[in-house]
Length: 192
Image 1 (cartoon, rainbow, N blue to C red):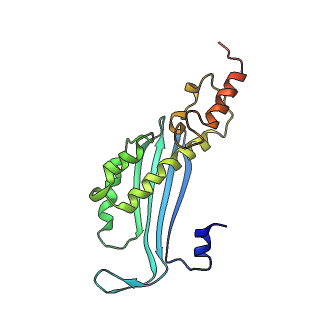
Image 2: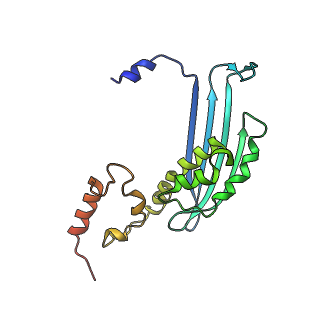
């Protein structure tokens, strides 16, 4: 059993953050990626000025991307904030439009932080948008894998492979998944 897991056994949490990410096919070669972030405090406390703060939902926000093409690119974006901790939070909503044209490739996180990070946007919304990048790719691959495809002749023929290589230990350049793919390619005769 895990030492840390044992430490929280039977202890009620004070805070919870939930992220929900879904991808919907909407048009040929286009998908909408929808992400929700919800922060909830389970205990009462005090604001910075000493006023009581009840247990409640603090943040509840949504971002939606229309994505398409290859590399997967953000074509349109919208955001909403049904629950916010401060009346001025919605002033950050229009900033998400800066994401139109951003490609979900290596460097995506840095690009999002450059456009929306710090005082340029909302920290919570930026976090959600960063997480949505990987979800957009998974949704894209899931949607397009519903039909069988011919095995590419080379690694270069695998659409999207560059976004996976070196993304984790298993997908390392010399990792087990690429070794398996190379072996599969070598086992199939190449037709001219």
